[in-house]
Length: 380
Image 1 (tube, helix red, strand yellow):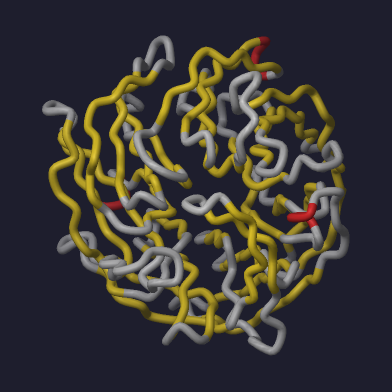
Image 2 (image 1 turned 60 degrees about the vertical axis):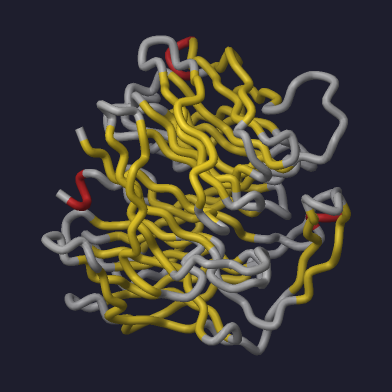
């Protein structure tokens, strides 16, 4: 069987010297051979560091930059026959407020203050039913929403600045990192800097009305979420600053979250720098996977108590520096992980019964990759 993944990341040299990446790529996995044997360019575009797709209309919503001086979001139309794509619409952000934030150099092991010459969202999500796009803007501390027309042109936009900060230096402002729809159509948002998760009702024009606000523990820094139809309304929160995976319960009647538990993504006694980065739940809802930049590993959890709790069963190194994102293959028998700072991918074989990972293929060259998304059905 041939499985497909989409790969995205940075194309500039700002993060990776001599970067050869040109945009969004497909990676083809031969599951019979257990080998990733083709990486091909789908769309040439600047800095597609995050994207999500719509199978319904073969569209990709992507964050992007232009000429290394302005950032925003775009819509890419994919030809399912050729597998090639083209940018059909875009909306650039107001660049009058560019923002800045504390960052970490994984090679020199030093913190530094990153003064930005432009601003671009950190996360984007596409609603193909209501024709809307939602984005999280980390460095200007805001949520952006857009209404699209039937041809996926941007016709109306809204900006919602968020206030707040946490106790850690990296939490000097709200730093909105993630936004996506819940199964009931509400929007859920992670404010990494403010230690809170917000839930909104979405109106027909893509405007928002806040329903609830959930405060994590101080210094957690919620970065991303994972859930699926098999997790019984439990949502798994990746905490970047605290290097933990938390469990919350979502009540769709009230639109509120309630805290259950949290678990460390890094081994006990590890004292080095770490920032957790990506999180996934297996399709059967039985296992949760979280990545660690610094410890450079994946933490594997078994879901217990019908989704309410987790049990860590494995921590495995990723064979590179700063594993930023990863995803499971269509059948869940493989996991593809991107090591951003060492410019390589690693393929793991996954035991679908017990959840454990083992190395299948290493040293797959690909520069500055920060987005891995399973896309077999998208290209079928």
